[in-house]
Image 1 (cartoon, rainbow, N blue to C red):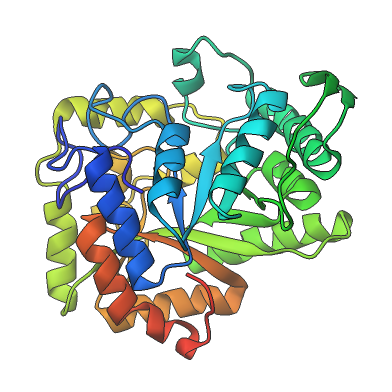
Image 2: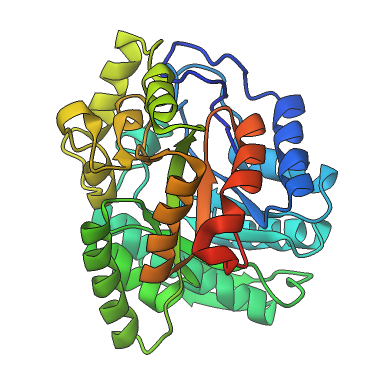
Length: 354
């Protein structure tokens, strides 16, 4: 969900298409029509694809409104622990789960964007945020399971007789968690239903999957993996690489500077990997991380023809990724291209959810 705005260029001061409710409604209804399983609604406190004061759709408000105008598609809502008290969040999420007919899941984001929490006066180290996320998920899950009254005495989460009513009708929202650090893998293994990974070259991803499997084995839980990537796809390979270059053709120096500052000395392992500078921004034959110059967090795309993109995704599917969070610019039109030309060919047509 393009909460920062959309268009066939990113990194300019303002988006060609601002993230109005009318536009975001079109995006969700189009995705629902095309048969997508779910839509990720990211979270941030300043614009992450254009100048940081450009219009931005707030995550929870947007999700609530989109639940009301959609009927089938699920929404994966990104949430940062510590912003909303867990007792209140548990009630909010249970209510939205009920309103949507059980169509929401939660993407817990402990790390966040460097300096972003501080915009709201919220501080804490990388380690502190993961410890807080652990307690946040635990307390929320207990409230959803029991309804309370619940007393919870953690280091960062404390509840005194908290209640949630009604509790989410089974199945409750699933927990998705992204990350590549040891803290992220340990938390995902203990608490998450799905570990989300930003795409990297296959050898690096294979090592990450091995580390994640070890962490899940220690927790005696079965892992599920999701892969997050952009796509730049055209009929020919040359056209695809030209489109990738054009995507950044209006990038503004101010935006470039803001994004560079957001990853400087970051403690986020995944963000540092996304922003790694290489010649021509090419991480391999099909991977290009030029988007990281102007966009926070995920900055890597698969570039090529529809079949090349499907083959690349299939390679990650065989590695163990069976959920894919895909995006392309502009989201409205490219969702159709991806649904029509790519998804049917991923895993030789064996994938059940995308």
